[in-house]
Image (tube, rainbow, N blue to C red; front, top):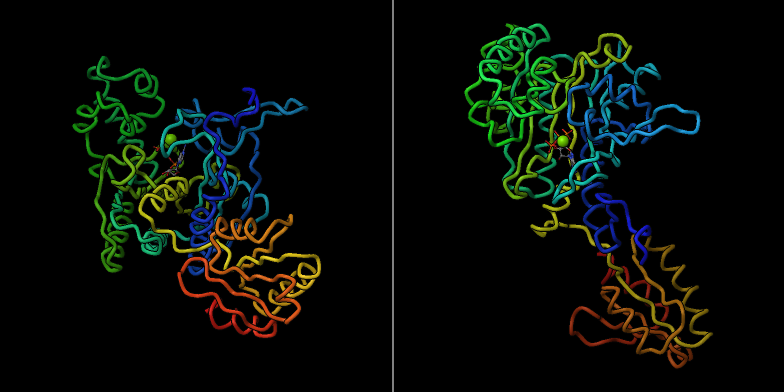
Length: 424
Ligand code: ATP
Ligand code: MG
């Protein structure tokens, strides 16, 4: 294949054989979010560049180096969304979803970031998330975390660790900022290039560094929790108390600051040991200032984003997929009148058994080649209708996955057979 017909680096195709695990994860997410009273919001994949600059923050990895930004034909600067919250807030303000209201919203879809592709890190990837608006107590932070905890339970993940922290109020963060700048300024040569640049713009970002050479420096930095304002302290205590009550284990990690600027008070991450370096599968927190920052009225907000690609890797590697997309049955039919009878009968079966997954042969072929297709499809049974069966108004039902004998039944009995042996 010539080079320009490859997918773009870091952008993946999800092939038909992988779609069962994706659908399983996505369906589980939809059912879960709905069961907690959340409703879906779908926003466009493209937004104005300004939206992300104003929300995510100038001195972040995303805005500094990861956005897919381009000019459209009118010269407007647009960006493929790198995350879901900015668009949700934009839509909420635009459609008046926030003022004097509570909202529980979920989203799912593709996101784009120009980073170095590796296992669990792609340039086009999928996130699902929930967002709550207009609720300021710690009970909603606890609920949001409980939704994620239940997601892991449903998927069968065992070793996922919850880390939480509080960034405090904007004022508390401001005083901590000063202390941090002073601390990191003591020896500038210990800071890498990114951190030197961020020192005065956003020193908290430095705590989020992935540079192992800076880990000692970061470990010895002043502790954010010592600078919390009284209200944020109480809020954090309230969250921990509720997590304890719900039996959700956590670790308080005072270095946890998250890679996006809009967070305040609660931040959290869910991390698995089973994916190597790309172990964070869910990240979130509170972003009470964001709605106002984007032009709306003061609105409390809390939510998370989940990296679905990483969940898919886990589900696949640990064999946790519980749904089945293989057909129940493959209809083999030989000869024109058998085919005509067969397709009519298939539609009738579909009328009476809506959950039946029936694959009907197309493109002709001998019995042998049709049975080969049936085997390849993963179907549990072959329904075989040839001219001789048709003459006696019968059909052969052949188990493909088990060694039991094939049986010949009357055409009228096929629907009962489906009911008794296949659907249940
Ligand atoms: P990281 O520190 O791994 O870069 P992040 O802080 O940039 O993560 P968020 O913006 O909080 O991540 O996104 C939430 C979740 O989305 C992450 O925890 C991760 O599971 C997933 N995610 C983020 N970027 C990618 C990517 N490039 N490819 C796949 N999944 C991703
Ligand atoms: Mg990142």
